[in-house]
Amino acid sequence: MGTQILLAKLLLAEQFGIYSYVLSWAGIGALFCLLGFDTGAIRFVAAYQAKEQWDLFRGFLSTSKRVVLGLSLVVATLSSLLVWLALPSLS
Image 1: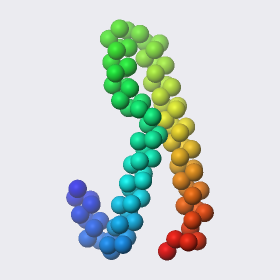
Image 2 (image 1 turned 180 degrees about the horizontal axis):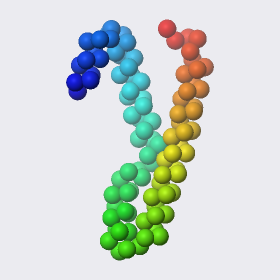
Image 3 (image 1 turned 120 degrees about the horizontal axis):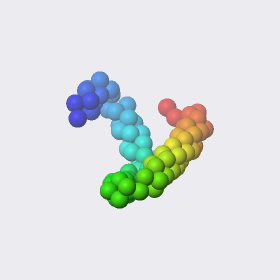
């Protein structure tokens, strides 16, 4: 909250609006990249640990890390490419 107030005072209204817009899209992208693994971890990690199913525990953690990292890299690359292509038309 304090950072938002400081940025609003330091940036012009248009620049702060652009910052807020990009930050909102980044949040949407992050939700897409998680694919529900964040909430699934709460359920499955606790269940696997309680039942001492260590293979499933390690498998869930390693698979979720790989999937989220891979999808995040794809989304970041596509987003960067989109910004680069749109750069000439941006003010």
